[in-house]
Image (cartoon, rainbow, N blue to C red; front, side, top):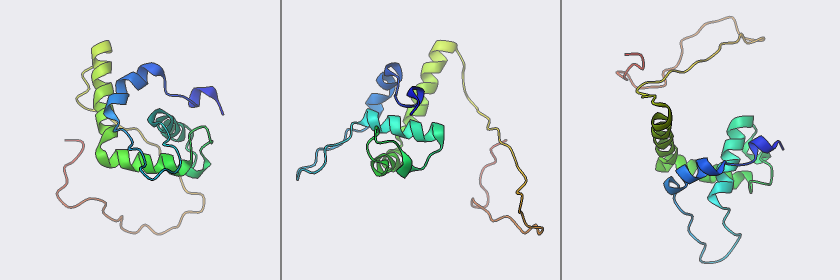
Amino acid sequence: MEAKFADVPDALWRLIEPLIPPERAKPRGGRPVVPSWVVMAGILYRLKTGCQWKALPNDFGSGSTCHLRFQKWVELGVFAAIHRELVGYYHGRRGAALKWSSLDSASVKAPKGGTSQGQTRRTARKGASNGTS
């Protein structure tokens, strides 16, 4: 495993640690709780490499633990809070007022794609706000 993918830098961890809810101890025993910084390193590793949760190296605990904690943190809004904190931090350091953002993508022709062009299924309810207005 490459060292650049294996750790959460201390400066970053100091900013985001207060935003992560503490894990409760298990009253009936069981496996020891994996520290949050180890789980966050596993989540970042997965995002950087694109590997499957079950393929995470053992350095991050089990892939299932990282995935469950990731789902829990998403549900609790932890990543949205981290995003706000880091944008504010960056604004304070660089003076960039990020009031909007953009996303870039690429389209690639499917080598065995079909010839028919059916209707695309809606993913949002009618009347959803347009991201470009």
